[in-house]
Length: 428
Image (cartoon, rainbow, N blue to C red; front, side, top):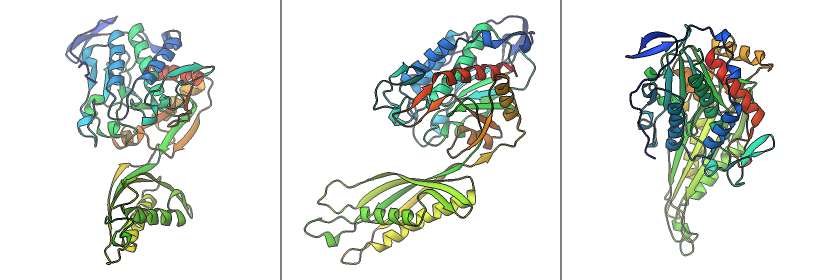
């Protein structure tokens, strides 16, 4: 959808005047400890925000409506147009997107290192058509055939709620960057291709994604994706099947081998661990034709880059060998062409990383017991780590993500919103 582009204008804030980015910006001399952000946070509004966000379409590459909604909310709260930026990451991603990453950058009213709060905008296809409704202590989709989209609209709403509260109530805060990436679900492409200079060199970074508010994700696996194209030979399946080379037969042999040898699904080889999946297969048009073309898409994951490479090699061998096995009556064979790319490398934050320590301090101050975790899925934090911005990932109460039984725990979401505001204002 068309996006209303940011245009320059300024807004007023209270207290001492200083010049920031070519415009006059007023900064408060009040310390963060003197003002409690908790009394300013409207948790009912936060719930309304997440309900609205989850109802918006916004698949990977089609995040336009979500970006527009967030920008409209920020403008309504008084954010200056110069502070709201859409980068051009969508021009560097494998699929042509509607819009780039959305970034809000605020100068600080307190002398402290810049902080970054982030959560991705896109959802997976099963969430298209979500109709969020409150059902007791949870939110679910009224349409049982769709997912809810709490992954990750709950994260997007949590940091949006913090930004709106700060803007509306002129809360003291360190320099802040709010970052809503695109295309996380199909390869972390927004975080990968973000225009780094727009982020302002943050020293503390916090990402909101799946899980409970107590969850502190300090590491994640690395992922490799593959496209496998099998070319066989078409023939009449009734009159002359022996003259054909079935691309489906080649695919079947390869997949069976991977399963039998323990290279598909959960992979355990001694003390080495990983996963792989054939997640897409397409080919054929009629039962009376020997299928000549099949396309598959696969992935391999492991926290150990060397073992992940072994998984990839096992997948490649299975398909290349299977292509040699299937022959026509005249000795003709098919072939397998395999293309792959590293989506994201694994990472692990150090135990004393500043963003982890600050997040856990806030949790404890709220009566929560931090639970450190390492994810077997990819996170935008994977690429932030590569960009030399160590980022801890926190939960928002999402449950059963990527399924039609997805739910949002309302109490956990509200806790995440409180945590986001405290981290943004520096109320450790």
